[in-house]
Image 1 (cartoon, one colour):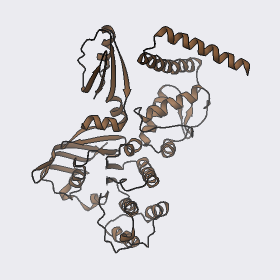
Image 2 (cartoon, helix red, strand yellow; image 1 turned 90 degrees about the horizontal axis):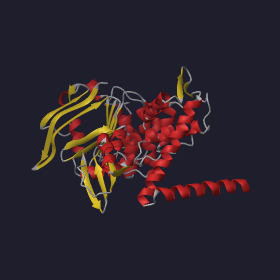
Image 3 (cartoon, one colour; image 1 turned 90 degrees about the vertical axis):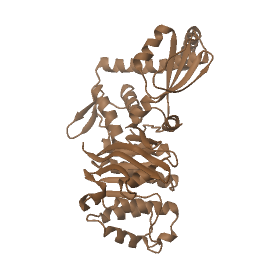
Image 4 (spheres, chains in turn blue, green; image 1 turned 135 degrees about the vertical axis):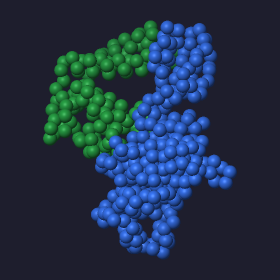
Length: 288
Length: 132
């Protein structure tokens, strides 16, 4: 599969605060990626840099094989973006907003927009200023989906949604993911949003993508291990993130499971047990 | 297939949950030979999970001989040979017993007491079915 985005050695600082530090990342077509990071980790900065809303100071970013600062109109047309904050004109009605946005794109699906408006119960005659944050978020997602994008970038898309709207939104993402060749990146700090929909997870920490893999691999490699020793021997645990000892038991978290090492333990009279962790726990362990 | 119960926040990857639940449904006869499964897209949409998760689970079920891909019909429950279904039952029960053994050892219950308890439970359950 081809690369949709490739980032090389991206660095970005605000005043003296280094936000992105020599970050490199490749995204393939068809991936649905959940981008996790603590508050202030630089998720929005990264997404805005990809879109050239934030100017890249150091490093290069390519989208569909073109430098993002000289992106052709054909490729710009393939991108949908939902910003974290709403900066639409307050006195426009939603219908006007749709008409306005449509004019910027070569391709636009009225059918898609009308369908979403109906399903998400959006009143087109209302003004932007009259909408609640949750309603506005739905409008922004709808607008991003209008041009039937091949690359969809969503910055905390579900943050303002109530549980029902959130489910509806995630359902929409699943439908989109069923269509081939669309790539989706969405940033969030709510791990349960990722667990259903994303096939890959990226963790942004200390200015870098410190982890990027398939969600399944992620869950199978970062696990909780418990050992019971009979002789109280010390263990050199590979890929150790953290451990604590209680009597003849050691509980630890590892970032990868070394099966051959575990197999050797039986000969040393140590029994072990693997406990799998949910994504939220994994995220906490990795960014601790 | 409506009865699949997925918990996304558990540590067990979703494809594994789908895999073991469908496997179980085939082994215990809830899904019978020749039955067509929903398409990847349909099931992904029903369960609200990424379609790649479902195709991964279907692929593994096909590899293990539980499903076959039929042209024009999609995924169908394969005819289970005696050995495959026997092996499946043994593997499934072994996994459950392993969990039990592990729990017991964490509680500090020794193997003998566990076996005694096991025998007692088997006796109790046969008695209660006799009474019915």
